[in-house]
Length: 90
Image (cartoon, rainbow, N blue to C red; front, top):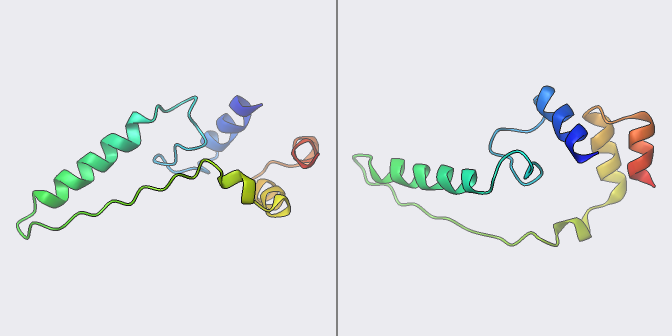
């Protein structure tokens, strides 16, 4: 089911290319790290030598606080409807 939904989201351009939290089966976690390092290097290579700040949050328990009704409505908004949406609701 996960592969089908990720494929659906990918085909319909629902997730941005850096949104890897939900697509671990497609993009390894190294991609966000490389993206961060590149952004830091770009900021450091400017004439003004910009400062770079990173904040890392552990969101491993994030799904414990999601309102299920909001999640179901978002899935419906993005095209996950009918039987599949009811499956998630249950």
